[in-house]
Every structure is written in C-alpha cells, then in structure tokens.
Length: 512
Ligand code: BG6
Image (cartoon, rainbow, N blue to C red):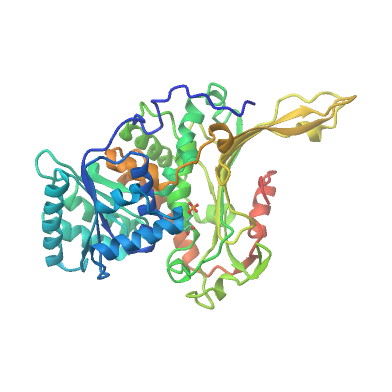
C-alpha cells in the first residue's frame, strides 16, 4: 500500500469547515488560567494556533483565576510553561502573542468580581477591536462550573450584544452521573443557548478519531462491509501504561467508567456504529452519533454479570521498574473499591449491528499505552479442501490506531512463498507520520480552533452527554454496591476475566 497520501479534497474535512476559514475577532476568557490544564495544554495549543496564523489579528486572551499574578506575572508564567512544552520562546511570535495576554485576579465565587471582569473585557474590546465576541473557557474544578455559569449570567456576560457572539466551552467531567449531568445542562441552559455551549471531549480533537468518518464513508472498500453481514465483532482498547501520577485523590471519585468510557470511549464507539449523517453539519453529525447510542442495549443485571468486567491494579512492573498498586497510590484509600479497569460489551439493537458485540475496555497501568480499534471481519465462506482449516479461518482485521503512532493496518491472509499453500496474515499498513510527513497537532489545537470558528461538530451535544450517562448508570450502580478488588498486576493486560470473556465466545483480544 502506498505510504504517500494524496491531497484530494483538501477543502473538505470531517468538521465541515474549510481549512482556510479564519475566526472572527474575539476575546478568549480563560477561567482557571493558572491551573495545570491551562498551562500544559490550552495555552500551548493557542500559541501554536497563533504561530500558524490561525488566530484572528484582533485576538486577546484574558486569564482569570484566584492567584494574585498580575498581567506581567501571568505572561511570565505562560512563557515558562510554553518553554516547558515547546522549547525556548523569546522570538517575535512570543512577543506579539504576549501583548495579547491580560489577567484578572478574581474569586470565581464572588459576584462583584464578575462586574470587574466585565469592565476589563469592555476595555479589551476597545483596545483590540474584539467587537464584544467572547469565548469563555471553564478550565476550573467541576464544582465551580455551575457557580461560574450563574455569575456570568447574573453579570449579563452570557448575553451577546447585538451583532456579537458569546460561547462557553465546558471542560470535562460533565457531571458524575446522569442526574448531575442533567442538572448542569439545566443550569447552563438558564443562561446560554445550546448553540453556544461547547462541551469538551478532547478525544474528538485526535486526528484518527476525526478520520473515522472519512474512513467509513469515503471508502468504497469499507462502507458496504460495515455491518453484521461482514463484521464479526469490534474491539476498542484504550490502554494507559501510567498509574495515578498524583491524581489518586480525584480518581477516587471517578474510576475507569466515569473517567474514560462514558466520554472518550463512547465518542469513538458512536462514530464507529453510527449511520451515515445526512451532511457534515454539526447537527447532522451529532444527531447520527446520538441516534447510534439510542440503539445501544441497556445493561441488565445479567449483562453486567456476564458481559462486563471490572478490575483494579495491584503492584507490578511498569517500564522496567516496580510500581505500587492502586491502593498504595497517594490519595487513595487503603481499601479503595474504585475500578481502574473496565470492560463493557456493547450491543446495538439495530438492523446494522444485530448480533455484533463491541467490546470496549479501558484501564490504567496496563502493559502499554495504546488506543486502537480493531474491526474483525468474518472469515471467508470457503475452505480449500485438504488445507489445515486453522490458518484460513482467520477473518481479516482492520486496526485503526488512534495513538500513539497514528495509522491503519489491514491484516489479510496471504500465501507463504514456496511450494504448497500455506497462509499467513500480513499487514497493509499506513502511518500518518510517514504518509503526511508533518507533526499531527495536539488534540486541543483543532478543538480550540473549531470553538473559535463557531463549529460545534467536535463538541458534545446535550443529548449525547445525557444518553452516555444513561447507558453506564446501571453498571455504576451495580459496581458501586460492592468493592473492586486488586485483580491484575500493574504492567499486564488487565484481569484474567477479560480474556476469558472473549475466549468463551470463541474470540481473542488483539493485544493481551
Ligand atoms: C483524561 C482522563 O480525560 O484523559 C485521564 O481524565 C486520562 O485519566 C486522559 O489519562 C487520557 O488522555 P490521552 O489523550 O492521553 O489518551
């Protein structure tokens, strides 16, 4: 297979936005500007967009958080975080970017502080010609989402002036269960229209996740085969090699289902399972995704018992060293029952997917960091008489590697050279890095750009977030009633039950 990508259809991408579109003038208001996410991901992504000429000329950023930084202190702290992620920064690009950075020290729970913020934003509008267009970004502790939204509303900052726009991006986690997600949606809707609410899921910014639409619907090879007639089952593996990295305290409130499956993994799942959208508008694409989840079968107690597996890592080996178990991590209770691994068998009651299981698994401290989808096709219908059947019963496999080393591999049966007819599986493979020869942007770059452009395709709609919670609730409730026990060693592929579950159905994980 050729490793060189052609640039056909350059104007067209999965978001429906053209590559050339430029955002309108605006102020980006970053709540939680001195926090970890802002420093590690958001500000470097914005700076990269700026360097690539993708931000408007009239662009300014106002950081807002409790730290008494002052404008210069804020600029210096951003510069040092950019240096950590992107290397030394003292060029003209940095100077020009730094001029656009302002800071307001404020207590996010105090109404008066929002009046001050509003005054500063008006000043910035005058100084930078940002025309009253505002993008608020909530990169704060989840307990502050609701209060910040209410305060913005009360201070009149959620309403756009005529001819301007106001948008709000809400970081994850969006609720901790169905009822808290509904409450947060209701609170947001008191002040903002759905069309101006952008719920963040950074997996939607990953190139290979965006590519799923193109892969499925722009390839005559795959589109006709993408159904129960030809697909035996699908696997989604989301594996991390790292453990808690100091986040044990907050992970105690979540676990693998809340942290990864309900959001990131279901985004991938819905793109794999959905029907073709009518067009590439945000509403059509997002409707097709949520409609797919509407057909997902609910988890009965029986299904939870026989088709789901949870796990928690004990001590083990990772990256060549001994690492502690989950219960020994900082901030974690010594008898914690939180799952660090989850396998859910998803089934769709639809014409397309009847009888095709989608095995989704996600875990911490697994053998390696890899997120991939494996589509396992049914084996060919015919056995050559006289051949050992074992070799030819392998169905073809399409492996979609989301990270790292983004790419595709199509595993097919081929004849081993020499006399006779022996077969072996070989890969037709494509690696993004080789095919396109350029750096793939970090997920936050395309996401922030789309938010600035007002394209919400890559953001989660209200019905999707609520449906995702609805699906996992029975699992959370059943698992919450008892404790997960350590049942896999760090640095392995997870609990033995996850392997035997597939084995009992005559299947095997692509990696184990
Ligand atoms: C976050 C989770 O949303 O995603 C983390 O809270 C997880 O626990 C991270 O490590 C994984 O993101 P990525 O892009 O590294 O796969």
